[in-house]
Image: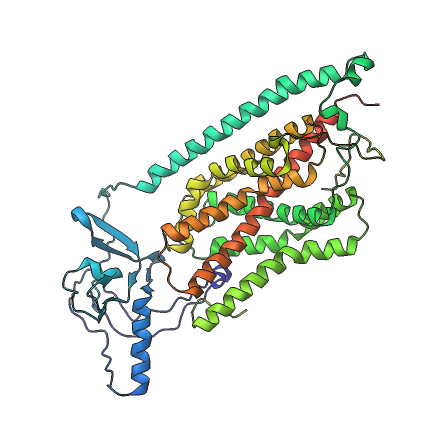
Length: 492
């Protein structure tokens, strides 16, 4: 393998790579296949003792080794993997490799120094400047590929089965309500003997208040408009990825597609927000338009700008240079609000909202491990078929969990369902944040305040988008359910 030093023009990045902070530099290594060469010198660097410039460069290099900075190489758009032996002669492979390691003044090896007993001198830095590169390529037809045990492919079907069990459980609950309990309720409420009907209690009794406009309807309509934008963007992106149009080998394509779709989908977001705001009886339509267009992007931009400032201060290369269908209500709203009876603990707003996010999160939490690994551990994610299926499962789970809890609250004659339906499924984002905190402390080895702030800053953006996404799913599922049940019951 022949290696020569030749600096070439750096490749241009697409929009997705820029947003992810990927700065690809051309390597000085040149490879000649079918020819093995050993101990080829790439370059020589001499540091002069006492020279201020050289001392600063060495201090910078030592600081990088203390923080366990890594090389990340790409060959033919595939990440280079560093493999080494661990306990019981097992081989462990990790994307990228460290620039070096150190032995502390107490003689304790840190990071990569633990893999080799020759690194044992106290208070010493070891630079990994000798690199053994092995490229394997397929040559010749009819040769079989050697199989390997893929742990991820084993875990993915298990996670899908776990999610499907949750969906079947919820579907059974909803089917029981829709086909049995709800059918009996409608038959009882539509009986001829109105005197007996008036003695009944349940969801029919709040028909005159169930569509009463919620408090802070402006914010709810804005959240739902932006959630609709995120939902359509996510669906189209995952669908294209599932069909193979967004290959993992095309670095940054997934993010580029998402951002372009986000920009193009402002129209449905504006329509949903304006239509719901009009349904709520709002009159400040100019403010509604501005908030729909600017609120979520403004929050994301402010967070992103703050994270970018931290990257600039740290000198990081990741810093970025810069339907026409109307909504109709099936029943008339009373002028005087109905008094809500005393609620039990489980039908109060907060317990219901907290319980509502458990099952949707349970359907995706195993998949989250692979997604977070691809983001923070630089591991390639390629199972978009599984991800699209999990997306559909999350859609069904959020809808059914929200409908179920909405029905229980209506049976308790509590008609404040607008915000509750949004927050019930949106609370899944809180569990996502808790899982991200657990992942930070249990899986990552992040050192320094700046890196910690960056992690939680980007996590906050992800949680906000997921909150709007899941909240919108739950709201429209609940809106459809409430409209349907009150359209088939006879009211005065």
